[in-house]
Image (cartoon, rainbow, N blue to C red):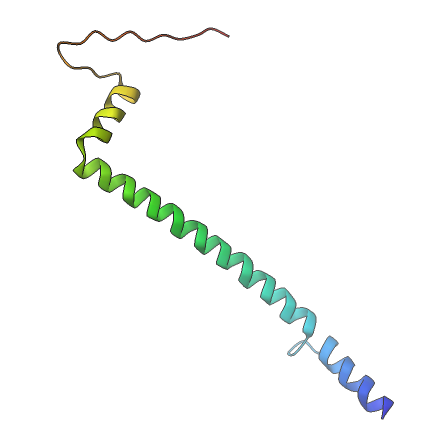
Length: 85
């Protein structure tokens, strides 16, 4: 009886096709990849929403034009202050 039990344990642990350690490794890999998929979906949703707000909303577009490209309306004076560190 002990021989059969130890043979079963050896087959479950060290057999490459049904190895418990291999299954645990695959499970960790699946979890890691699932997290990566979730992160990619979240960032894709963020950038999709950002693109739509730029396409259809003038407020965000104006904000980016002013902040990043230092654009202004013809009747405005803009002063850029920079601190020296």
